[in-house]
Length: 165
Image (tube, rainbow, N blue to C red; front, side, top):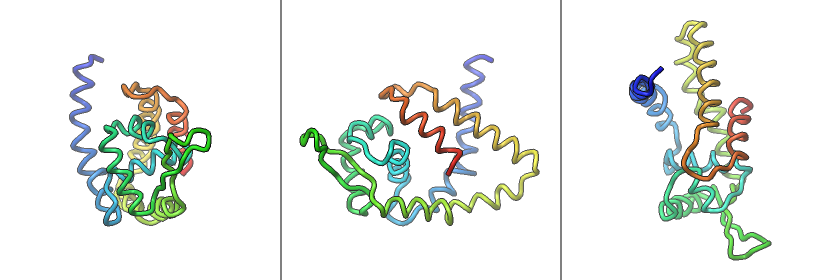
């Protein structure tokens, strides 16, 4: 398959994904929690719950200045806290709080269920194909270069956790 065909397929997929998956997902988030905040929390979970600001900015592909604003909002919501690295007090790490863990657990159990009616309307073969397609995409995306920090520890964690939550 030529790269042009792959690019066309990606450009076809993006609006379909946005209107059927991403947009309904955004509507589920609690007031005061943006999609980017959710992504930061999720990334921190995949990374073991604690990261430096630079690591988090690299994984989320945000500039440090934007990340600082994002972390400030997460701190205000009491979803993360800043902690000093005991080995080097100049290093400040971002750590998920218990409130963040509770939020994510509640969100996955209650709110993400909005996808159930969508799945229930699909024929069994489409559901099976969709699941296989998602597993394949997660695998490919987890190996795809991202022009950020090459840190496979979070990538493998993302892939492992994607199927066990």
